[in-house]
Length: 417
Image (cartoon, rainbow, N blue to C red; front, side, top):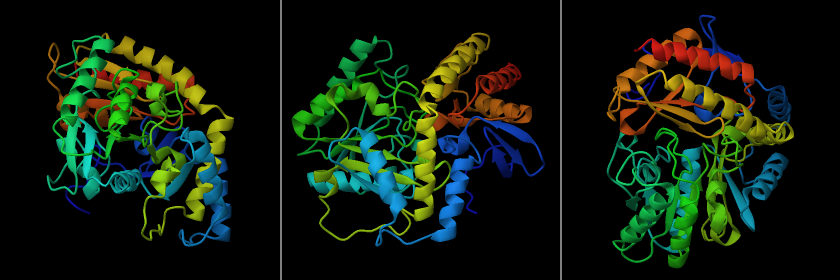
């Protein structure tokens, strides 16, 4: 394995099995999972409905490629297209969020005949050559070489940067003015803006509601497409909305939407939704060997059905709201916590050196270790300094489990004081 392969914990753990919101390691230790394989185990570990669908499909046909049709792929495409909010939607399946964003960038640049892209500061969109080139986070940008010309825009980080002191209305106006200024520097037509409604790797940072809607009005005047990266915010995780873009939807849905992670509940599923005229602008042959696989599509169909039938979006709103209140109460007693932020079951605690705005990655690492010792798995993030603890459990989390996790996290936080 390469030296640059990131692993959590000083003594990395081997996970062997899971059930519900819990996982076990090779030593028999049981953990409450508050990170879900980076927001991927969306409903529950070993969900019977999904494992049954995978097993039954694997017994019939495991692989065919997109050169042939399979019923689960068509069924999932129809459901995703209807849920996307995009008119005349077409869906192309991939194997990951990176590949989905890569495809979205290809569509936008081909449609607009331009390699110029707008991206947000502090952003992350994947690890491929093209997605790294629109990632505004040096900790995840191993090369400055790029097939794209990227311009970075302010607005995705509400409580840091030159506009942090403004109220939401003034903040949005300042970010729109910055966007206009950036467009004044671009030569010719920019292809698209790609943006996460809530930045994942960046530490669950988000702009005020409506900011991307205000951006959209500017983009529309220039014919620029809006790509909403819903790899982490999709499928109801934010509680208030099924998609993250809906918090900014005053000007309608995005032109292109990307998704991955949670829809497969651990299976390798990603995809792109776009208006037919954009999706169909490709005039060459293209296929996917593994995108749309019968087994992963069967998992996606079963997982999405479970999510909708059990109103896991509503559960994310209810249980996530209670958890955020509990986290804010805990943070009030821990000087190292600069901010608690999030929406639904997508929460974050930013750690700084007490009394300052200086990020404290060592403290975040110490809390991560202490929480693990207490039986709780968390994530990390926060720009290049990784000083943010990320919380994103399966959307079926119960109130009792939320309280259990909060208690373990509280002890872990106090252990570093």
